[in-house]
Amino acid sequence: MKISPSPAIALNKATATTAPETAATVTEATTAPETAATTTAASETAAAPETATAAPETATAAPETAAPPTVSVNRQLRNISVDSFLTENENVNTKRKANNDIKLFQSFLNHKNECRNIENIPSEDLCTLTCKFKLGVTKKYEPTTLRGLLSSIDRYLKATGSKLSFANDIEFFKVRQVLKSKQKSLKRRIW
Image (cartoon, rainbow, N blue to C red; front, side):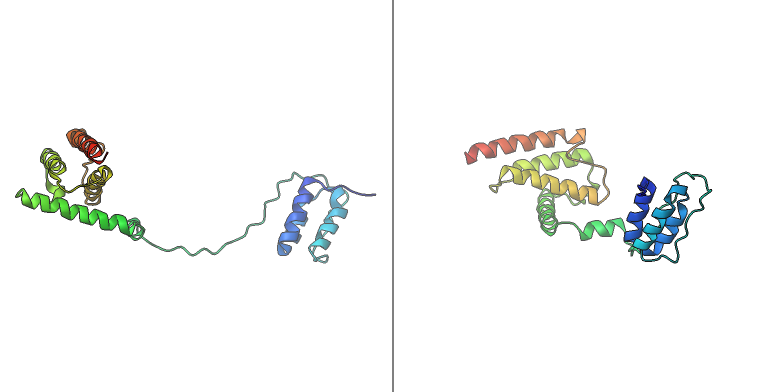
């Protein structure tokens, strides 16, 4: 007589073939009376027939709530701060371009006799100075390079903890308009 295995036994067979040391524990958890022959077959597959015990013939079917075997995994976790992680993984070229753009903007501020740091300039003054900077650029820049200059200054402000943002703040609407107009005029010169 051939006994078809129940889904719990099929799971036990799969567990028994992948983890022989837990096969006896898993097969002992099944207590259905019709699975006695299959339990022995599962333990033979696991190559541990002496540790498998057959379920008694008079036992009633237990619910299939056998807990899956737990496997402890040793994981190595390193203790690192978020700020140091971000600085380690920042693109080197982006960092270099941002530093060059900030130096260019600082030199413009020095030329205008502005001795405050960028992050300490109030938003109204920063808006005016940035517009003059965009309009005063005489080198032939690509239109996207002007956007990159503005993004570098914005990135610098965020890195120093400033709440100002050229991209989102209403105070810098004029800066965005000047940038758009300057990009259009540069595109007309290129074409």
